[in-house]
Image (tube, rainbow over all chains, first blue to last red; front, top):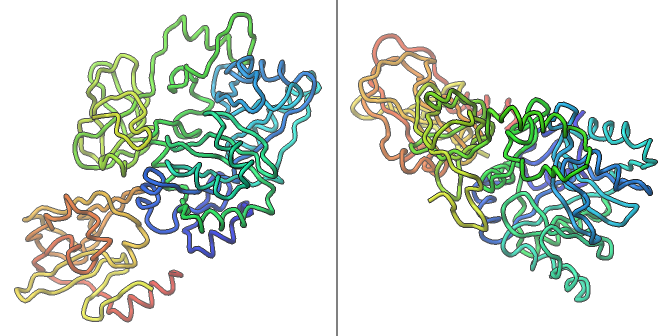
Length: 361
Length: 129
């Protein structure tokens, strides 16, 4: 039996096509996926992301705990509400999950992890928590909505009192605050500005309907995937997993090799650095008609072969784009085996789209 | 409720067929099929001259999420693939029984059984949509 968010009945009543995602019954799309995509690029859309797992980590030693488990460096977090993106790694440097960590106080951090990895992440946190006296509390009492797009912040602010709206609109990028009943964070997974809102589950339907009444378009996981891919953001399980490390997943920028910090996976990554990274995660733009899809083979000439990890049609660029893991020595032109035909693709550095604008010419 | 024009024939794999005055058969995918696939973004149609047999994949329709084969519903020779779909694949979503036709086939040899509109409607109802 798949799990359901507090908004499941609302999605069903709206006629959404429901699919299984990481063990959850989630809306894929309500109507046209492409229309939902454009709503986020051009105005504002709302996603139910309550399937993601909010975990509160509390205790006197919570910072040292995260210094050990999180590959990014939580020493960067000194202002309450500030967020940091990074990975949990295993001892081999493989990616257990990618997550956002919020600093809420010296005894209280909050992590938001993926739905499909919830159980193993919680087990990993709990396994390492005891020596630090850290309590691991899953916040399944909270729902989470992502409101994204150039008009998203203004639409959310319109639902708040003037004092609360002022506080929400003052949030900097990657910053959050508890504002009355809502934990509002200026984060997202679309390449657009916006908020992610965590709130008591009982208030989720009311907020969803208020956003709809304010002209915010309901969007499903289909548009969430095309938006994140245009934004060059990885999807755990597709673009990286425990068999790949952050250095070959386009995530080297999230690994802080600050002097003297002994985080799990560090030794393995340093050994890899010395040996040399053999593969890299790149963006591809298909130069002919067709659609790139996950697991298609990429031919990089004498450098060897690779594989597409995520591929789609880009509604903004009106052509196909992908993330692919290819040999580090590959050049700027590759071929992709698309249903038995070798089609030329150009290697680019993601993102493909940022704030509604094409970055790939 | 998806549209099922009564003057067409259908297959269990959601293709429709229309016999044209010159005897060739126009083939497309049904309203039910286009709705299930969602926004189409790429279509590959067969080339003129290609010989096809029933059940053989002869066209590809790709939505944002997935690629799907379209099967030749009869045996014969393709006389034309719809050239307009290369630049406007969404025509299949907006006009599946008109401008969204995929190919025209000149029938030859023995033909298998096709569904009437009523039979196709019953089939899609049984599939729960």
